Image (cartoon, rainbow over all chains, first blue to last red):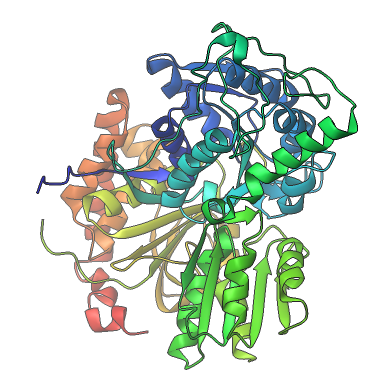
Length: 381
Length: 201
């Protein structure tokens, strides 16, 4: 058996790990505007990307243009990303919808900080969860991922690029200030130890090509602009050729397809990690840095004789209903700690449908929910 | 490498003013412990929106086991480089934990059990630049903490610095180490040397 090549270890910030992940996934375009606490992603990209074979880095005039630039780069065949925080995420919402409508794979990292508005620039929060789901207007599908430690920042960035390419859709990676600004030892995987997925490029003669054709997967091949395939891109509801259409049957076909291409692959998209949930009476459902607090609290509760478990969400949307229902089969209560007024607990309650009590722990003071706060609620039974 | 002392969530907080190099200090120490000594380390930070001034804080959690919660909750070591930081974070020090202060900037210590050195003036007078203060602290802590290997930490320090400031920082590191040994005494780290004590809890 071939000996496994030793992996390179670095002591890195969550934000640095995002850059490492993006470069491993094949990102070759970054367009952005710096904002705390996501700035290091842009800073390190500006140093690293120009040193790669064909990497392009642009600082744009604002976040609206940043989003426009990465959509353009993606249409030209690049794997493209941007990163932002709070106010910048709000500015990106309109073009995010454009990327959904034009089925353009891009990765958007939002490092959540306290809000609304300028809020608490250097403090953690999880207030953008429902904005990530519903921030851009119109009925739309979206994939929202999260990470709770530095190694996961690397892995989930690769996953974000893979899902964007696989499903021709923008993917949002939601981090928080704590995760982004924690330094930890991480391992950089060697080539071949992780999957890299790239969009399918059409192989038929150009005159046969339809950019928005109905397919089994709901995703049609995507040529880079300028490669001989005719390709019209619009934010208007369009027909299979990409030209504007208001015919109800064509509108329905498009809308159903962009939802179906995500909905029929829940098993691939919905990622969770379960710790001690198999026999748990009390299950904590958490994501981001709060999941780390919860992990310690669950461990301490077990030491105190309470059967506690953790369901850590790595995919926030589409919400992992199947996994939640599985823990609901035996759990006597659920606890949802988060750094907002209860954005994810809504989803949990929707799935729970009143079966067991759902208790929430909410912090909106720019501080992380601590293990002792969670432990206290677990021990209340 | 000698086998490292077994640790279970050893928590350090560096605190003081923005601009003192507190986060850099935590980063370098964390890197030395994680890559050089092979511990699991999380380094987190907390700072205000001001570019300089304001308060700054950096937590290190060091453990032989994987670390879940990345921030410090009850401190084994508090390093306070300003009076305000000392007042704010002293209550988080666990009983038996050690307080290290900048003795010129922290005029009133909340306890008579503390270790002090005038780090800023040492850097200014003996090294020539006040900015080397954080490296003097790093040197002192490398003496104080029984699980830190001086040579490994110095190597780690040198590996992250640009070449033009390497020599001056090595000097600052050695100064901190030497003075800590002289002023604090050889057995100062004994509070943590009892392994039983560190892994129980």
